[in-house]
Image (tube, rainbow, N blue to C red):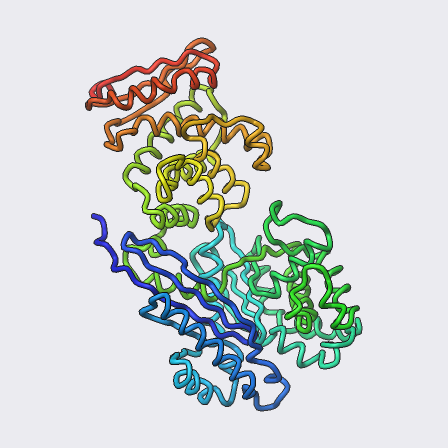
Length: 527
């Protein structure tokens, strides 16, 4: 039984961190999808000068900056029609002796009620944010969030936390402890080493647990992770398209040595750096390099998702009917979310997907192709999304489908998989794919063959439900040799429309397969 439509609602999430304030505004749709309306981020340095003192407190100027930004974000959220604003504060606020004064000012001047969360709760939300956007299968992974005041460490699977910790190892905190002059002057190698030693001493238990649990992959989130990876890519002339945004241990060491050897004014001019982070990035590099040493990591994959995304996932998990609340693999969840956000014809898409897989499996049995489970999965997702371009216009909707898939945040897929799915959808009608067009997409020869084969199967499946009536019960390749390929189709209904559409494509299909193509129309009682 399908869930009743969910009332449309706009919700805003605000994360008040030690260094930045982040905003996420989302529309919850009646068909149990959501649409991101706005994402904003402002650096406020709320924790600036807080960690030098015995009794940590937020400084008046820092509070003013935070209140100004939060007021702006509240007004923006209400402009979008937000009915609910959920706000949390992390390290800088939870440690401040004057936190109650700050919370009262936020409520009075910005109209914002803020909940202070513990380090472990912060880590839990970070885990939800990152893990809901990656596909780690049956592996265990490390998840890191390096903020201004704290470092969160989580070990877990796709759906379960097995270790969680929050440590006072933030980039602003370490800068204030070790680099008061180093913010402006070059940082002596000895001082950088002292920072690393301090970090490693705090990581002993977490790294021990990591070895026991045999963690195989690591993800990091924060502006510091992102900016160091961007600097590394510029320095080593690496394209993000190859592996996504990734920090490699050897390269990070070179990046760190370059950064700490420079005074602040020159550090700000390093290619790829965010100048606003130049004064705290050396401390951030010391933390991350120590993480990679202590956990024996060759690389850390950088995630754009974090605490505010975790707040959304946590919110949706309490609403029955949203894909995030079910035990659905992240890739499938992501595809369903994208389809629903484009108001796709879900029934038709599932019918075409089923027919596509029947054709894929039977073609493999007969040796028409030799692709495996990975390609079958891409076939399924491409067929579910093939018509989402209708959301823009029916005319040339295959081009619109291609564009939407290419530019949407399909979570759990790498960039090559997204390109393959997008191109399968692109060529499910009208023009057949050719090597020149696919080469322009930067697809390797193997991926080009995948697109050519699977888009042709999708084209056949789409024609078999051209009326969107679900007339066809089953479709399979039943014969294949060098001269003749036969597809058998089972239906009790009048399928003249589907038959006409297939016949219209027959010449191009025969050219693709290099053999005559016959369609046998059967009754279901012969199954």
